[in-house]
Amino acid sequence: MASSSSSSYGIEQLQKECYYEWMSLQAKHIVDLKEALIRQRSNAYNHHKLEELVGKIVNDFQSYAKRRSELTDKSCSSYFAPSWNSSLENGLLWMGGCRPSSFVRVIYALCGSCAEAHLSRYLLQIDENIDDGHDGDSSMSDLTATQLEKINDLHVKVIREEDKLTKKYANFQEDVADMPIAVTAFWRDSVEADVAVEDALDKHEECMGVLMADADKVRVETLRRIVEVLTPVQAAEFLLSGKRLHMSLHEWGRAREERRYGCVHVGMQQQGEPEPESQRDRTLIDM
Amino acid sequence: MASSSSSSYGIEQLQKECYYEWMSLQAKHIVDLKEALIRQRSNAYNHHKLEELVGKIVNDFQSYAKRRSELTDKSCSSYFAPSWNSSLENGLLWMGGCRPSSFVRVIYALCGSCAEAHLSRYLLQIDENIDDGHDGDSSMSDLTATQLEKINDLHVKVIREEDKLTKKYANFQEDVADMPIAVTAFWRDSVEADVAVEDALDKHEECMGVLMADADKVRVETLRRIVEVLTPVQAAEFLLSGKRLHMSLHEWGRAREERRYGCVHVGMQQQGEPEPESQRDRTLIDM
Picture 1 (spheres, each protein chain N blue to C red):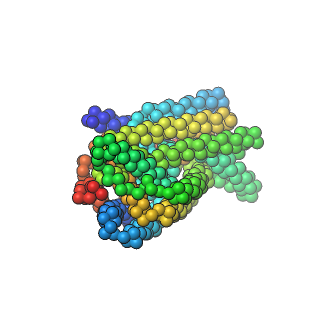
Picture 2: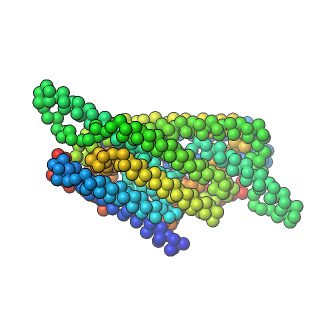
Picture 3: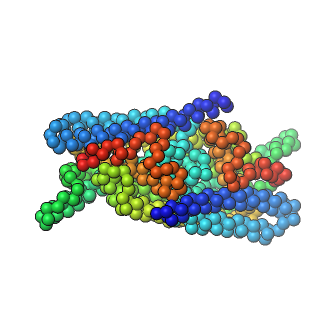
C-alpha cells in the first residue's frame, strides 16, 4: 500500500507540473504567433515559415495530450475537476478539457467580429476618419464560402463525436450505481470499501482515463482539420485566439474567485504558473 | 465591489454549510430508515408510518434542492465541481449532483443482488444449512412485472430528460467561445476582463444555475415517481441504499485521496462533516 501511495502522489504532482508546463508553452506560443503575424504583414516572414509554426503548435498540443494520457494511470478523476482550475473553468470542462466544437465556435465568432470591425471601420473612416483601435488586418473575414462550408461540415461531425463520448461518459457514471459498488454500499453497514469496491473504482478510473484520451484525440484531430482548411495566416490567428481564450479564462476565473472568496491575493501567482500575457509582454499589445 | 465580494464570500460559505447539513440529515435518514425497517419486520411499525417516513425523506430532498437553488446566485460554478467533494465524486457529477437515471440503476442492482442472495441462501440451506450473513428480508426481489415495467418506462423517460439538459449544458459551454468573451480575448492584449466579459460570465453562471435547478427538479421528480411505484418497504430499502451509496462514495473518494496524496490524515473529519455511519452506529449493523 505504501508504494502505491507514493507512486500516486508522484502522479498527482506530475499532472500539475504537466499542466503548468503546457500553460507556459502556450504563453510562448502566443508570443511566437504574434511576432510571426507582425512579420508576415511587413513581408518579413513567408507563408511557408508561418505554416511551419502552425504545424509545430498543433504537434505541441498532441504531445501534451499524449503526456496527459500517460499520467492518467488509476488517477484520472483529478483531470475531470482539476484543483489547479478555477470553478469557472471546471464548470466549462468536457472530458478533462475544452469541447472540440468550441474551436469551431471561435472561428465563427472571429469571422463575425472581423466582418463587423471591417464594416464599422469603413463607416467611421468615411465619416470622421477615426481609428477604432483594431488594426483590421485580421484575415478571418476573408474566409471563402468553400472554407466556411468545410468548417460547417466539420462542426456537425465534431458534435456527433462529442455526443458519442458524452453517452459513454453517462454510461460509466451510471455503472457506479450498479454491482458491486451500490450493492456493497447497501449490504455492508460499514463505510469502508472492500477489495471488490476498490477494484471496481480502479476500473472506473481506468475507463475514464481511456475516455479522456479519446476526447483528447478528437480535440487534436479537430484542431488539425481546422488548420488544414485555413490559410497559414488564418490558422495563426485562429490558434492565437484559442490560446488567448484559454489563458484569459484561467485568469478571469481566478480573478473572480479572488474577489469572491479572497482566497488568493490579486496578482499572486500559483507556483509554476506562467505570468499573464499583459504583464509579460506589453510591447506587443498593438499586434 | 466590496459589498458584492463579501456577499459572494457569504454565499460560498452558505453553499458549503448547506451541503454538510444535508449530509448530516442523510446520516439521520439512514438511522431512521434502518430502525423503521427493523420494526416493520417485527410488526411493530405499520405500512402507513413507513409511508410517512418515505414521504418526509423525499420532501427533505426537495427542500435541499430548493435551498441549493437559492444559493446559486451568480456563484453557481462551484456546484459543478465543489471543493468539498473528492475527485472521484466530482468525476461522477452531472449538473451539480447525481444522474437521476442512477436512481433507477440502484433498483436494478438491488433487484439482481436480492434475487441472487435468495437463490444462494436457498441452495446453501438445502446443502449445509449455512447462514451467509444476509438477513434475506429485502423485498427488492419481490418487484412485480408491472412494477418493473413502470420503472423501465421511467428509466427511458429520465434518460431522455437527462439528454435534453446535457445538450443545453453543451450549448452554454460552447457559447463561452463566442462573442463577447472569445472576441474580447482575441482583440484585447490584456488578460483583464472588461465589463462586457464580466457581464457575459455573470450571465453564463446564471444560466448554469437555472440548468442545475432544472436538473434538481428531474432528480426530485424521479425519486418521487420511483417511490410511487414501490411498496413502502421497497421504497424504504431503495432510499436507504441510495443514501448509503452517496455517503459511501464520499468516504471512499476521500479515503482514496488520503492514501494517494496524504492530504488529510485517515479518520480526520472535515469541519461540520457527519461522522461515518460505521463509527456512529455499530448497534444497527445487522439490520
